[in-house]
Image 1 (tube, rainbow over the protein chains, first blue to last red):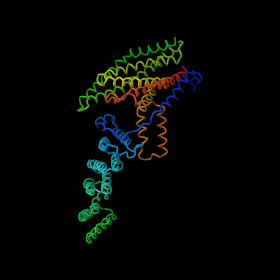
Image 2 (tube, rainbow over the protein chains, first blue to last red):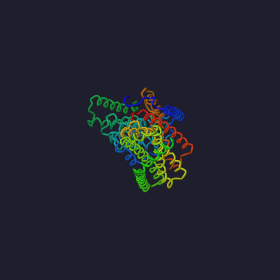
Image 3 (cartoon, each protein chain N blue to C red):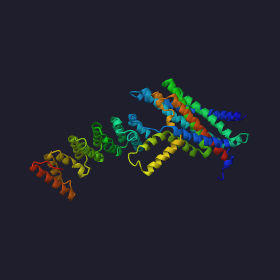
Length: 240
Length: 257
């Protein structure tokens, strides 16, 4: 560079000090153990007000960073079943705090419905599904898909049909913006658990209401209603 | 003779800090932090002392770093603009001794800052914990001092130097957390981009000091500090001050004045 003196103008002692210190620094840091997150180290989330102050007007960014922070406490290398080591009540506190910071965000609900609920522990799984349900009730039109997933989980994994039915009923009742398949879910759960009469009434009502505008969907649901009626006549439960 | 030159520059660096009322400014900032911490303590329903200690320690640590680095940067910019540097170097003085003198002077100011920040903690936290925290803060400030000096010698202007110092500081404090997040992706852990980022983070971790291990408020609030941890802080600080001091000298020797 024109504005700089030659490298030879730098005394040898400075060269040695710089390079020597650099080598020792790298060696020193190489000798330090890698940071390891501990599953039991998850503390309670900070108060929402404190987080709002810390976000300095950018709560969405802070919510996203907090989500990543929380995510770092599971799926840790070296821990065989990390979710079992987590305090699920704490996890739901964190997820609720993140949702309060960024109510439009879907990430925490995805984590609850798809990630944390995969734990092989029915009590913990139920806790996560209940969390999704509670959050759904606060903003049903935006959060219905996570409750729909929870209903399927409750029905097929937990084998708690009543719980699944309650979730599906709430989607039908509180989430008018949800698509037909989600709002019809409660009918098929009823059919599946043998409540054919209720399912028939609900499906017939749905078809009568004029809400189904798609011709193919209308035909499909009409056929299902017919199947249910036939099944009831022959006193056999539907296979679907 | 040489030692006297270094000591003289260090003394004038201290005098400059006194005459620009830096100590008063810092005491006022510290006072505001303590008042806020007291206010927070009054609001708390439980663990009020723990809250007060934690807030005061974390805020004082950040404020100390901010005030100290800004003082060093503005002091050196003033030296460049007033041509005081040219005047000083026109005497029989090595450039490395000028840097050493400045480094010693600023490090003394950093030590005084750490002392001032520790005094209130001695009243709130157990004395041993406060002592460990204060020493660790002094080591951290020594690194910040060397970093600020290196940046202003290299960039010579306030804005780029300050941006680099604060960016470096934040990254050095957050790097461990960033590596943890990077180590545990839920999806895409095997992709090339993820591996490249992981490698980059590991390389950065080799070069940067892990400042998250310094002066943690948990040392005061929960007494989790230890003398071996403090020793590691001291060794890392000494090493990094030598590295940054040498880098500052290197750049200073190459500059045409």
